[in-house]
Image (cartoon, rainbow, N blue to C red; front, side):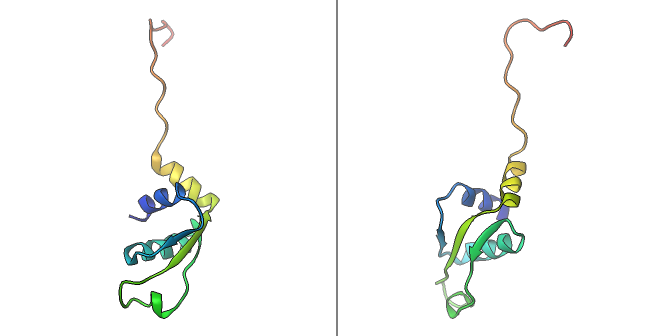
Length: 88
């Protein structure tokens, strides 16, 4: 899914060059949703024919960073040791 791909992108070094056709559609979708900044040239290379594609991801937007944080879910509370207070 694109959100998993976004999480992977968020951990990458930029600029990130994408050369897999399966990832190109995810880049287009994330860019359209304004979750990343990227360059996806309209060229014969990216036309849908063959396996050679290329896009460059420049970074994750604030909206994208928020989506990654929300996808992870809330952090777990730390474990407590010892006796429980009567107020709990």
